[in-house]
Image 1: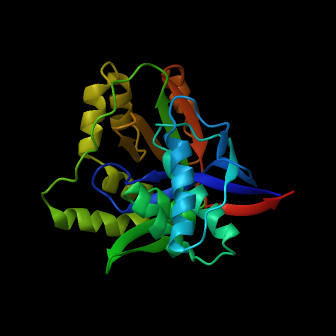
Image 2 (image 1 turned 90 degrees about the horizontal axis):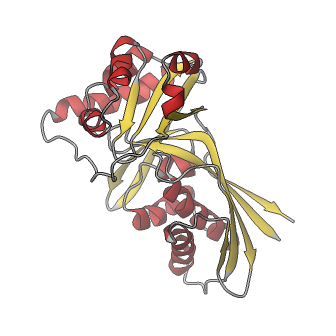
Length: 286
């Protein structure tokens, strides 16, 4: 028997000032678990062993909390989510590990239990919460435990994700939230879920505008003046990931023709995604 875990990609933080928020989107990694004599990993990226180690560590941690002896598995990956592209690849590995372990533990853990186990490994919950719960998630700490509020997402919203084809600088350290104007940040955190639920594009644009990560993004990606001007001219909300040098537009309907007309198609890999409402799913496969 092989166990199939289907895990969605996710966007986390939506820039640098909205920590604790993330959304699952319609791009997936499929993980297959089958009993083996030693741990074996097939189909994983060759450039690093980190994804393999994260799957194994998450699986073992779930069994450790259950005080059960950990069985050994061969894990195969069918990868559609690219690494280091702002889509939560490493988080999918951790989520797959805890979801698979829970299945073999006869589902003793609730989703919130699984999130807390996973977050203890990953160090944050912004990617993990939507991967496990689906949809748009806000997570917070209460008495040492991660809690989640899940919000619906307007069905017409489309996420257009741009990933540079050209060489980019080495990844930067994460942008820390600014110390000033906490009231403004709190208001944004309240209004963003509302805007996603109603599909309010003007509100999304206002909430996501003028973040520090956008400034760093264009400082590092020199020669993208045309893209910077496009962001000013087009009334389309967007957010950047200045660690992975990606940019994501949010719209109703496709904006791909506009991007192609401006020549961005030649310099960026472009994918269009929708919100994923279900999160990670489990399917037993013979």
